[in-house]
Image (cartoon, rainbow, N blue to C red; front, top):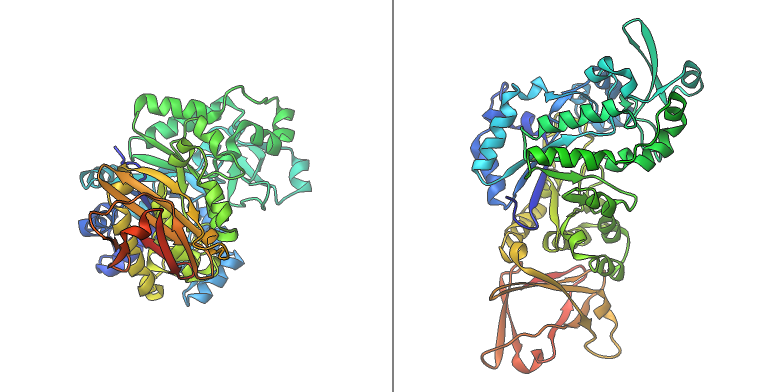
Length: 494
C-alpha cells in the first residue's frame, strides 16, 4: 500500500540498462541482473515508485523512421555519439511483452517482486491511443484501428499510412494529438469499436499482473468526445457511433475487480484532470501547476494550491519529465528551478521526478535515444541539492500530516514584498513542518500567520537546508513568524 503523497522516479529503461552494462562491465546484463544496490539507492532516497519507461516490444519500422529524424541526428551530433544510439520510440509498441533487449518475459514480474520486497512499487507504460504500424494487433483486427479510403490517403499522406494485411490493402490513420503533426510510426486505435475496448482491457488485466501500476499516455485522446472530434469524420462513415460509456470507466472497473490495489496514473492536459479522476484514475498529471510555476507568479501558484483537497491529493506534481526541457534551463535559471522543486516536493499529491533531473543534466533526452552517459553531464551542486531535498521530504509529516496554506502579511505598510512568499505547514501529532518559499527574483520579507509557542523568551527553529538554527524572541512571534530578507527564490524548511 502506497503512503500518502508518494515519490516516483521516471527512468528511461534502455538508457539505464545500457549504463548499468557499462558500469559493471556486463554487456549481457538483463533487468533481473541489475544489482540490488542500484534499487536500494533509490529506496534510501525516499522513492516509493520506480516507473520504468519504455520496456515493451518496440517496432522495427519505428526504428527505421527514427534514424531519419533530423532532430535525433542533431542530438547525436551534440553529444558526439553515432547513429547507433538512435532506437525505436518506446511509444510505438508492437506488443505488450518485454522487449528482448531487456531480458526474458519472466524478468518483469521477478523485478516487481524484488522491488516490493524492498518496499517499492513498479510502474510501467500503457499507450492507449495508438500502436506501432507493424503491431500484431493490427494484423488480427484492422477494424480496431481508424481506417480511411484510398482517396483519403492520397489527399493526405501525412495523416495515413498504407498497410497490406493478407490480400487487402488498408489505409490506416496515424496516431495523433490534434495540436501536433501525426506520429508517423504509429496507427490510431478505434475506441468506438467494442473489439478494441475488449482487447485493450484484456491487455491491461495482463499488465496488472506484472507491475503495481501504470502511467497511461495521453489519456484524454481516448475520451469519447475528443475521439469523436478528431476521428468522427472517418468513424461515422464506417458506421461507428460514440459509445455511452467512457473506455476508462469500463477499463479501470474491470482491472480493479481483479486487482483492487492496482494504480492508474494519467498523463492528461486540456483541463480534463478532474474528469479523469471522476472516471477512476488514482492520479493525474498536474500540468496546470507546472505551467504556473514555470510561467506565472506567486498569486497564480497560490490560487492553484487552494483547489479542492481530493483533487490535490490525486495530482502528480512535477517540474521535469521526458516531454519537457530540463527545469534548470526552461525555468529561467537554477535558482527558480530549485525553488519550484521545493514546492512540488512538499505539497499534497504524488511527487514526480525524472532521473536526469536528479543529476542536473541540462539536456532534453529524446525517448528514442538508447545510450547516454548522464554522469558526464551531471551537475554536482544540483545532485547534492536533490539528495538533501528528497531526504527532507521523506519525513513522515510530509506524508501522514495535515497540510495547510498559511497567510503571509506585510512587516510594514510600505513593503509589498510579502506577496512574493508562499508558506504552508504540515502537522502530524506533535510535529510541525513549516515551508517558506520566496518565489520571486527580489529579496522579500513578511510575517507568516502561524501560532507558535515558546517555553521561554526565545524560540529556536532548525532550518533543514542550511542545517542551522534560527532564534526568535517570544514577543516577535506572538502575532506570527517574522521572516526578514529571504533571498530571491530562497526557501526555508523548519
